[in-house]
Length: 100
Image 1 (cartoon, rainbow, N blue to C red):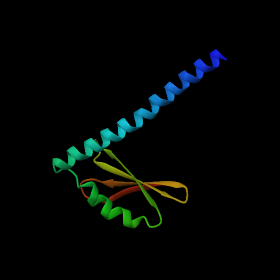
Image 2: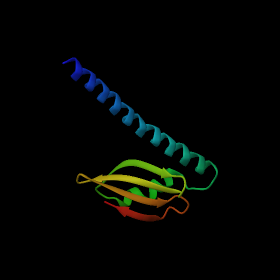
Image 3: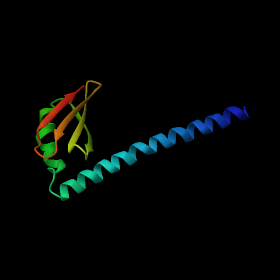
């Protein structure tokens, strides 16, 4: 039983470490987007959302990721149990791709 408890504890530590990585990446994405916006290189997120969210009728908006190397916002939506990713050029606000 003691061996089981040790493995369970190690497993929980491993899971908690991978769960922590997600918020760190989200924080970096948001910071990179904020810096690019402050420098005038991309449109504000609210402007991107104002253009794209109404096009996604019937889908719940979940949030976004930002790729600072490409200047691309990826807006995430949920519709009928499926996640939909919409890539948007941060400079122009134009949708550049969509996947389901």
